[in-house]
Structure formats: C-alpha cells, structure tokens
Length: 194
Ligand SMILES: CC(C)(COP(=O)(O)OP(=O)(O)OC[C@H]1O[C@@H](n2cnc3c(N)ncnc32)[C@H](O)[C@@H]1OP(=O)(O)O)[C@@H](O)C(=O)NCCC(=O)NCCS
Image (cartoon, rainbow, N blue to C red; front, side, top):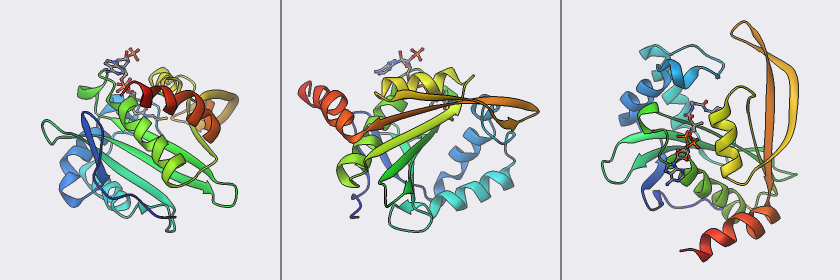
C-alpha cells in the first residue's frame, strides 16, 4: 500500500496525522461530556488525553502494526484542530476497513464531519484499495448514525445488547459501504457536481 501525501485538503478542511502541538485540541474534545457520552470512557483528564494523543501520533499508516491512520481535522480558515477521523484495516486479506470520528461540539452542525468522511472513504477505496469500509455506533448515538447515512453507508445490523458500557447494556448499529457502491453511488455524483 502506498500512502497519500499530507496534508489532504477539502474545500474547508485540512487533514494530517496528529502532532504534539495538537494536545489542547485533543484535551478539549476528549474532556467534553457531550463528546464521550456514547464512547467507552468518561471525560478524560489532561494525563489521559496526553496518553491518548501519544497513541494517535503513532497511527500514521495503514502499512504498519497497528494498521491505522488517525487524522487531525483542521479548519483551513483558522488553522484550528476541530476533529479526529480515523481509518483502520480490520483484515488485510479481505480488504476490510473501518472508520471512527469525533468532533468538538463547537463545530458540530456544519457538515465538517461529512466533508472529512468523504475524503477518508475516498482514501480507503481509491488509495488503499479496500473492498468494504464499516463503522459502528451505540444505537442511541443518532448523530453518528446520521453521519454514516450521509456518507452513503448502509445499516447492516443492529446488534442487541452486545456491550455493557457505563452501567448499561447497549445495542450497536453497524453501517458499511462497498467499493462498488462508493464508486457508483457516492463518489460519482459528488465528482460530477465539482
Ligand atoms: C458524530 C459527529 C461527528 C457528527 O457530527 P455532526 O456535526 O452531526 O456532523 P457534520 O459535521 O457532518 O454536520 C452535519 C449536520 O450539519 C448540517 N449541515 C450544515 N451545513 C452542512 C453542509 N455544508 N454539509 C452537510 N451538512 C451540513 C447537517 O444538516 C447536519 O445536521 P443534522 O444532523 O441536524 O441533520 C458528532 O456528533 C460527534 O463528534 N459526536 C461525539 C463523538 C462520537 O459520538 N463519535 C462517534 C462514535 S461512534
């Protein structure tokens, strides 16, 4: 696999691997109760956020082990880090990928996650030749589900009470999109409108 050159850009965003200087932005996101509501952990302390950033900084390639790309999402206008989008490989043999994402609530509701997500799916299919990319969320996390639907991903399953998180049994929604679906249905119209 040959990776892309960073930063990657969209109309409003720049995406690149995380750096030391992203600490305050990562801490602001991961210590925010609204961000972690449906995630596995409680709002992070500065020390926990530091450790989380250290882990992210190492996730720069789908060729390594672990095989994952964790990208800081930056507003081109202000240079501010507003989010985090990841692309991982679950099975290299079967060309199966997955995505994950979180954005600071100050920047929800502007389509930034959708814009970053289209770029990341394109990276997965066009650069890394993945066959299928999946994403999952707590079934109560409607913002996450809506984002995956906007990205053209299909609801494949609702798994009943598969995880016990924060004192509650949680259902999980699994979304996915195939390379052919991306090329025929999602990427083509987007490119035609450019
Ligand atoms: C999941 C998450 C990233 C979604 O963020 P979001 O702001 O809803 O998504 P987008 O940035 O794509 O914005 C889409 C919203 O902006 C609106 N919007 C405004 N301008 C837009 C534009 N130019 N393009 C697309 N949507 C636009 C859309 O209508 C949509 O609003 P709606 O959901 O009320 O219909 C966010 O809720 C989050 O970070 N949650 C916490 C972490 C988390 O749970 N992560 C997922 C774990 S599985």
